[in-house]
Length: 384
Image (tube, rainbow, N blue to C red; front, top):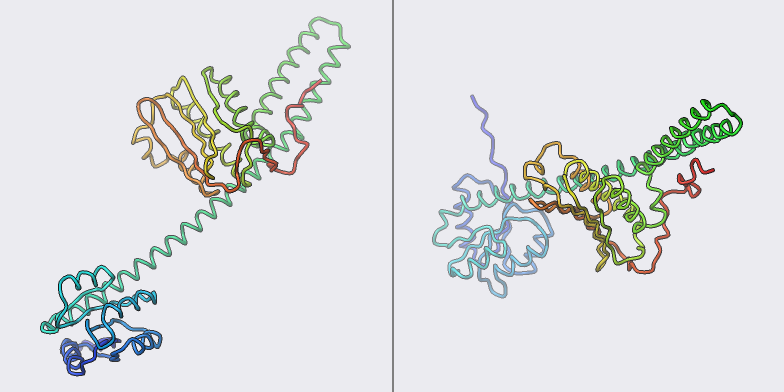
């Protein structure tokens, strides 16, 4: 024989000045099978006290009471921040009043001459309230999850940059130092050996060492942009020049600032954004012209990289493994910024925007350093 489960107790707060109307409402609810825990109040003070005294599953409220009203009760409930279903019940409520109450957050309204709908209305209100609270809880959990993911992304970006800096220092100290020593030894050999064939081999070896030094410098610059020591403006100007020389078509850098004072972390994010954007242009855009535009206006740093290439299709942007743009977006998010993409048949524009405080721009030097290795200067490798 199946076990019969008792219905849960319904905690009902009833704002009503008429004992007869109160008893009638309870009769309809009990007839529908509800077990009730009820408190009737008929003034504002008692209503406020009841809200603070315990949790309620639903509130029924008459519209018009001596010195009090259902709309005022609804306002008090809203001000309290409690998520309790509120049903307005009255014998004299007009359509305009009912609409205003619903807009203000009431779950439902009923006329006292049609209480047959009271039990279904209460059940629906409670169910809707539970669904709303579940959605709010899910939204809070989703927001917390996104915050944790953002913090993880920021931690990973920081760890990657620290690892890059460590590798770059090792290349500079070990590989760069060894290549420079080899270059000096070869130069010494070349000065002390007169045989033409040896001189030719020495010259060839010196050329190979110079290429290795240049490659090491390029790798080191990609790993750790030491040029940022001179500020973001100088770094982007150098990047544009290198891109133009390497790819053989114009890369224009535009800015109205000689230098910028920016919060820690922002220059590196902007540099990496431009670096990744230019890499994508050289690999995929089939462009013949690129421009980089840097501005700082009304507390927002904007960095735009535009090309006149083939553009990005919607399919390109929707690729499941389109990690380049996602990476730019995640990196921007670590400093509170965002990335906008605009693309068409005439080219693509990538825009990085980062809110910054206290950055005026003109004539102010960025004194922040990328790391503590102040003596690191790869441009001295192999110098005679």
